[in-house]
Structure formats: C-alpha cells, structure tokens
Image (cartoon, rainbow, N blue to C red; front, side):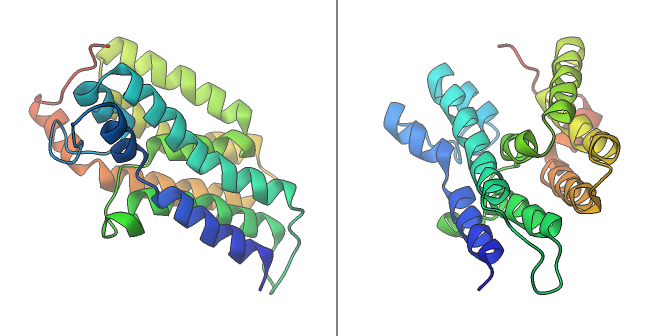
Length: 203
C-alpha cells in the first residue's frame, strides 16, 4: 500500500479527534455542541468554556492539520500509482480537514475546519498563511466578525497559493476544495451576517 494512503488514513483519524469536546470536558462541564453556536471549534469553546480551553482547542485543531502534512513532506513521498508526489501530499492535507468536518467519532459530524486548515497550509506555504493572518486580523479588527474573516481568508488563499506555490496545481485544487467546504459549513453564519444577527467578537 502506498505510504500516502497510510498517511491519509492517519490524518483522517487524527482530524476526527474532537479537540474542543475533550478539552471542555477536562476544564469545564460545558458541551460546545449544546451551547452557544453549537460548534466544536475554538471560537465557540472560547465563548462558552473560557479562554484556556479556547486557546488549547485552537492549538490542537491547528496541530491536527499540521502533523499529517509535515509527515507527508518529511517522509519522502514519490510518484506512485500514476499519482504525483504533490497530489499525495494534497491528499494527506485534505484528510485531517475532512476528519475534523466529518469525524468518525461524532457520527460523521464535526466543526467548520478553519483552524485545521491553518495547520494544513502552514507547511505548504508559510508566506501565504502569514498574509492570510494579517487579512483575518484586519477584518476582525474592522468588523468584529470571526466568521467573516474566516470565509474571506478561505476564499483568498487559493489566489495566494496560485502565486506562491505556482509549481503545484495540486495545492491550488486542495485550497479550492477546502474553501468550498468552509463556506458550506458557514451557511448559518452567512444567513446571520445578512440578517445582522451574527455574534461579534468581544475578546
């Protein structure tokens, strides 16, 4: 079996680990699925369970995306089964993101994937990710909407990857898939933004 499949399976299982739920059980009695926005991600954990669980959830979700991609880059993947090395790495990158969205431990339900996507992009293009962090910070500072910043960054990072990683069509395709899924997961946020009822960041 190609090592790329092994890494992808590992990535999916790692991505499926519900970091936010585990940490809220450790630090509080709050179940993020039953309070606030009912999302298991860092923003809802921060708002409902406190600063420390929120920060640790953010770090944990980022690491879920980072570790499989870092492993794929270090493992020396090669072209195999007619699939190029970059596509194997892209598969390793997509797997934890899908695990977070469709966790096998939560009945194939999960979070919105933004922090896990950050971990995915970190080893692929640190420069593109750094630019996105500034874009995100600017949007949240100006309008105070975490969801808006997340969606704008999801939509713009394919452009940055097309420029900074023009050597790889696989990474561009990966970013388009991730962007589409992040927007899909933010449907309720989009509706609240249009209605003017979306929660603003007060941190």
